[in-house]
Image 1 (tube, rainbow, N blue to C red):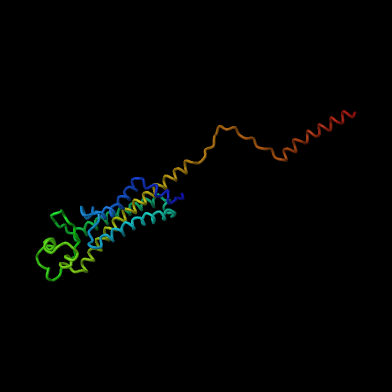
Image 2 (cartoon, rainbow, N blue to C red; image 1 turned 120 degrees about the horizontal axis):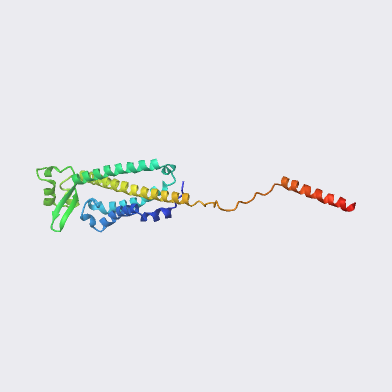
Length: 241
Protein backbone atom coordinates (compact mmCIF):
# COMPACT_ATOMS: atom_id res chain seq x y z
CA UNK A 1 0.00 0.00 0.00
CA UNK A 2 1.22 3.52 -0.82
CA UNK A 3 2.84 5.36 2.09
CA UNK A 4 1.41 8.84 2.71
CA UNK A 5 3.18 11.53 4.69
CA UNK A 6 1.43 14.04 6.93
CA UNK A 7 2.58 16.95 4.76
CA UNK A 8 1.19 15.34 1.60
CA UNK A 9 -2.10 14.71 3.38
CA UNK A 10 -2.59 18.31 4.52
CA UNK A 11 -1.38 19.70 1.19
CA UNK A 12 -4.17 17.74 -0.49
CA UNK A 13 -6.74 19.75 1.48
CA UNK A 14 -6.68 22.19 -1.41
CA UNK A 15 -9.30 19.98 -3.07
CA UNK A 16 -13.08 20.47 -2.85
CA UNK A 17 -13.25 18.00 0.07
CA UNK A 18 -10.65 19.98 1.95
CA UNK A 19 -12.60 23.17 1.30
CA UNK A 20 -15.72 21.61 2.86
CA UNK A 21 -13.66 20.52 5.86
CA UNK A 22 -12.27 24.04 6.22
CA UNK A 23 -15.79 25.46 6.00
CA UNK A 24 -16.95 23.18 8.80
CA UNK A 25 -13.96 24.26 10.87
CA UNK A 26 -14.67 27.93 10.19
CA UNK A 27 -18.17 27.70 11.69
CA UNK A 28 -16.95 27.74 15.32
CA UNK A 29 -14.56 30.57 14.42
CA UNK A 30 -17.38 32.58 12.86
CA UNK A 31 -19.49 31.99 15.94
CA UNK A 32 -16.70 33.40 18.11
CA UNK A 33 -17.14 36.79 16.41
CA UNK A 34 -20.92 36.70 16.74
CA UNK A 35 -22.00 35.37 13.33
CA UNK A 36 -23.95 32.61 15.10
CA UNK A 37 -26.52 35.24 16.08
CA UNK A 38 -27.69 35.18 12.45
CA UNK A 39 -28.68 31.51 12.62
CA UNK A 40 -28.58 28.82 15.33
CA UNK A 41 -27.38 26.35 12.70
CA UNK A 42 -23.95 28.02 12.52
CA UNK A 43 -23.51 27.28 16.22
CA UNK A 44 -26.36 26.66 18.66
CA UNK A 45 -26.88 29.07 21.57
CA UNK A 46 -25.61 27.41 24.75
CA UNK A 47 -25.82 30.26 27.22
CA UNK A 48 -22.87 31.32 29.33
CA UNK A 49 -20.79 28.30 28.25
CA UNK A 50 -21.08 28.93 24.51
CA UNK A 51 -17.50 30.20 24.14
CA UNK A 52 -16.05 27.11 25.85
CA UNK A 53 -18.03 24.77 23.61
CA UNK A 54 -16.94 26.69 20.50
CA UNK A 55 -13.25 26.34 21.34
CA UNK A 56 -13.65 22.65 22.19
CA UNK A 57 -15.42 22.05 18.88
CA UNK A 58 -12.62 23.73 16.94
CA UNK A 59 -9.98 21.64 18.72
CA UNK A 60 -11.87 18.41 18.04
CA UNK A 61 -12.20 19.23 14.33
CA UNK A 62 -8.41 19.53 14.04
CA UNK A 63 -8.00 16.26 15.97
CA UNK A 64 -10.42 14.48 13.61
CA UNK A 65 -8.28 15.37 10.59
CA UNK A 66 -5.24 13.90 12.36
CA UNK A 67 -7.09 10.74 13.44
CA UNK A 68 -8.22 10.05 9.86
CA UNK A 69 -4.62 10.47 8.64
CA UNK A 70 -3.40 7.84 11.13
CA UNK A 71 -5.85 5.35 9.60
CA UNK A 72 -4.11 5.52 6.20
CA UNK A 73 -1.93 2.50 7.06
CA UNK A 74 -4.96 0.23 7.44
CA UNK A 75 -4.98 -2.47 4.78
CA UNK A 76 -8.77 -2.21 4.42
CA UNK A 77 -8.42 1.23 2.84
CA UNK A 78 -6.76 -0.37 -0.18
CA UNK A 79 -10.05 -2.12 -1.02
CA UNK A 80 -12.42 -0.21 -3.30
CA UNK A 81 -15.41 -2.06 -1.84
CA UNK A 82 -14.41 -1.01 1.67
CA UNK A 83 -14.09 2.62 0.56
CA UNK A 84 -17.53 2.55 -1.08
CA UNK A 85 -19.16 0.94 1.96
CA UNK A 86 -17.50 3.44 4.29
CA UNK A 87 -18.72 6.30 2.12
CA UNK A 88 -22.31 4.99 2.20
CA UNK A 89 -22.09 4.52 5.97
CA UNK A 90 -21.03 8.14 6.46
CA UNK A 91 -23.81 9.37 4.19
CA UNK A 92 -26.34 7.54 6.35
CA UNK A 93 -24.81 8.96 9.53
CA UNK A 94 -24.88 12.47 8.07
CA UNK A 95 -28.58 12.14 7.27
CA UNK A 96 -29.38 10.90 10.79
CA UNK A 97 -27.23 13.53 12.50
CA UNK A 98 -28.71 16.43 10.51
CA UNK A 99 -32.21 15.15 11.22
CA UNK A 100 -31.52 14.83 14.96
CA UNK A 101 -29.93 18.29 15.12
CA UNK A 102 -32.91 19.81 13.32
CA UNK A 103 -35.33 18.17 15.77
CA UNK A 104 -33.39 19.32 18.84
CA UNK A 105 -33.21 22.90 17.57
CA UNK A 106 -36.96 22.91 17.00
CA UNK A 107 -37.61 21.63 20.52
CA UNK A 108 -35.05 23.46 22.65
CA UNK A 109 -34.23 26.69 20.77
CA UNK A 110 -36.54 29.68 20.74
CA UNK A 111 -36.30 32.67 18.38
CA UNK A 112 -36.99 35.77 20.47
CA UNK A 113 -37.73 39.03 18.61
CA UNK A 114 -36.00 42.16 19.91
CA UNK A 115 -35.35 45.73 18.84
CA UNK A 116 -31.90 44.79 17.48
CA UNK A 117 -33.14 41.65 15.68
CA UNK A 118 -33.90 38.04 16.46
CA UNK A 119 -32.14 36.48 19.45
CA UNK A 120 -31.83 32.70 19.65
CA UNK A 121 -32.13 31.17 23.11
CA UNK A 122 -31.76 27.59 24.31
CA UNK A 123 -34.40 26.76 26.87
CA UNK A 124 -35.25 23.95 29.28
CA UNK A 125 -38.12 21.48 29.20
CA UNK A 126 -39.30 21.41 32.84
CA UNK A 127 -40.97 24.63 34.00
CA UNK A 128 -40.94 25.84 37.56
CA UNK A 129 -44.29 25.48 39.38
CA UNK A 130 -45.05 29.20 39.38
CA UNK A 131 -44.46 29.41 35.61
CA UNK A 132 -46.47 26.34 34.70
CA UNK A 133 -49.37 28.23 33.17
CA UNK A 134 -50.95 28.55 29.72
CA UNK A 135 -48.42 31.05 28.42
CA UNK A 136 -46.12 29.88 25.66
CA UNK A 137 -42.37 29.59 26.11
CA UNK A 138 -41.83 32.62 23.88
CA UNK A 139 -44.23 34.73 25.92
CA UNK A 140 -42.47 33.76 29.15
CA UNK A 141 -39.04 34.61 27.70
CA UNK A 142 -40.30 37.98 26.47
CA UNK A 143 -41.81 38.73 29.89
CA UNK A 144 -38.93 37.50 32.07
CA UNK A 145 -35.83 37.86 29.86
CA UNK A 146 -33.46 35.74 27.74
CA UNK A 147 -30.34 35.81 29.92
CA UNK A 148 -29.31 32.63 31.75
CA UNK A 149 -30.34 34.07 35.10
CA UNK A 150 -33.76 34.90 33.61
CA UNK A 151 -34.23 31.46 32.05
CA UNK A 152 -33.58 29.84 35.43
CA UNK A 153 -36.69 31.63 36.67
CA UNK A 154 -38.76 29.80 34.04
CA UNK A 155 -37.23 26.30 33.82
CA UNK A 156 -35.37 24.11 36.28
CA UNK A 157 -31.59 24.39 36.13
CA UNK A 158 -31.24 20.67 35.45
CA UNK A 159 -33.60 20.72 32.46
CA UNK A 160 -31.71 23.66 30.94
CA UNK A 161 -28.36 21.85 31.27
CA UNK A 162 -29.70 18.59 29.81
CA UNK A 163 -31.33 20.40 26.91
CA UNK A 164 -28.10 22.23 26.07
CA UNK A 165 -26.04 19.03 26.29
CA UNK A 166 -28.43 17.35 23.86
CA UNK A 167 -28.25 20.33 21.50
CA UNK A 168 -24.46 20.42 21.58
CA UNK A 169 -24.05 16.66 21.10
CA UNK A 170 -26.38 16.64 18.09
CA UNK A 171 -24.51 19.60 16.58
CA UNK A 172 -21.09 18.16 17.38
CA UNK A 173 -22.00 14.74 15.99
CA UNK A 174 -23.26 16.32 12.76
CA UNK A 175 -20.11 18.38 12.34
CA UNK A 176 -17.87 15.44 13.25
CA UNK A 177 -19.42 13.11 10.68
CA UNK A 178 -19.21 15.72 7.92
CA UNK A 179 -15.57 16.54 8.71
CA UNK A 180 -14.63 12.85 8.97
CA UNK A 181 -16.26 12.06 5.62
CA UNK A 182 -14.44 14.93 3.90
CA UNK A 183 -11.13 13.88 5.48
CA UNK A 184 -11.60 10.33 4.25
CA UNK A 185 -12.45 11.71 0.80
CA UNK A 186 -9.18 13.69 0.84
CA UNK A 187 -7.28 10.58 1.95
CA UNK A 188 -8.91 8.32 -0.68
CA UNK A 189 -8.29 10.87 -3.42
CA UNK A 190 -4.63 11.10 -2.40
CA UNK A 191 -4.31 7.30 -2.31
CA UNK A 192 -5.83 6.96 -5.78
CA UNK A 193 -3.58 9.72 -7.15
CA UNK A 194 -0.40 8.17 -5.75
CA UNK A 195 -1.38 4.66 -6.83
CA UNK A 196 -1.99 5.83 -10.38
CA UNK A 197 1.32 7.72 -10.40
CA UNK A 198 3.16 4.65 -9.17
CA UNK A 199 1.48 2.53 -11.83
CA UNK A 200 2.41 4.92 -14.64
CA UNK A 201 5.88 5.72 -13.35
CA UNK A 202 7.51 2.35 -14.04
CA UNK A 203 10.43 2.64 -16.48
CA UNK A 204 9.57 1.43 -19.96
CA UNK A 205 11.83 -0.95 -21.91
CA UNK A 206 12.46 -0.11 -25.56
CA UNK A 207 11.65 -2.96 -27.94
CA UNK A 208 13.76 -1.41 -30.72
CA UNK A 209 17.07 -1.66 -28.87
CA UNK A 210 19.72 -3.94 -30.33
CA UNK A 211 19.87 -7.20 -28.45
CA UNK A 212 23.00 -7.77 -26.41
CA UNK A 213 24.68 -11.02 -27.48
CA UNK A 214 25.14 -13.45 -24.63
CA UNK A 215 28.64 -14.02 -23.37
CA UNK A 216 29.98 -17.43 -24.23
CA UNK A 217 30.53 -19.75 -21.35
CA UNK A 218 34.00 -20.90 -20.28
CA UNK A 219 33.36 -24.37 -21.69
CA UNK A 220 32.58 -22.94 -25.14
CA UNK A 221 35.72 -20.78 -24.96
CA UNK A 222 37.85 -23.83 -24.27
CA UNK A 223 36.27 -25.73 -27.18
CA UNK A 224 36.94 -22.75 -29.47
CA UNK A 225 40.56 -22.46 -28.31
CA UNK A 226 41.32 -26.19 -28.74
CA UNK A 227 41.33 -26.35 -32.59
CA UNK A 228 43.50 -23.19 -32.76
CA UNK A 229 46.19 -24.80 -30.61
CA UNK A 230 46.10 -27.95 -32.77
CA UNK A 231 46.61 -25.86 -35.91
CA UNK A 232 49.65 -24.15 -34.34
CA UNK A 233 51.22 -27.51 -33.42
CA UNK A 234 50.63 -28.91 -36.93
CA UNK A 235 52.26 -25.85 -38.54
CA UNK A 236 55.30 -26.25 -36.26
CA UNK A 237 55.69 -29.91 -37.24
CA UNK A 238 55.59 -29.05 -40.96
CA UNK A 239 58.26 -26.33 -40.56
CA UNK A 240 60.58 -28.74 -38.74
CA UNK A 241 60.32 -31.25 -41.55
